[in-house]
Image (cartoon, rainbow, N blue to C red; front, side, top):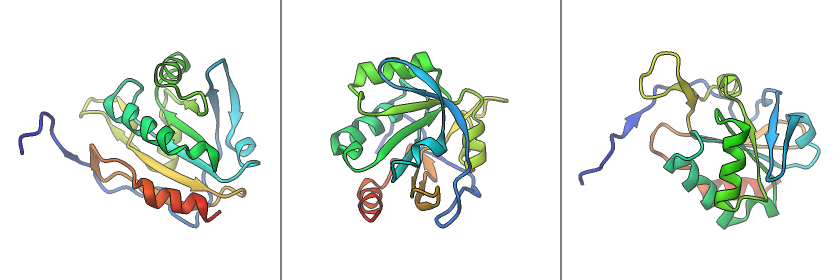
Length: 170
């Protein structure tokens, strides 16, 4: 099969694993109307919380992942939020263009959250430019990781059925 893009294997990562407490953070959380700084701890009050790390808004993988999550209506069973290096303005456009009003997206242009979770990677070998590799963490109300999926290559997409089972088990 002749793919129009290269499949890139990621280096191994020491990411946050099941049974560990997820790192706390506060960043701008964007919805379809506005954004404000919101700590992860505030979201944990309505568990389970699903953190979806994704590439920059507008990229095929980000759009595909969010459309799949929306089609599966994860917001009905969990507090689902995205995390990427995109700005609040880009997040607002993604929410509006893809009809993602049921979801909110953390803006982390410094990629610090991805580094804390162990899912940062250099973007296409460009020095000093990084973004999160695709990853999904399902957290309970105490912030403990109940399920973790982290991409091992690009492009790779979450194990949606397995993540849904983890959400339903909480």
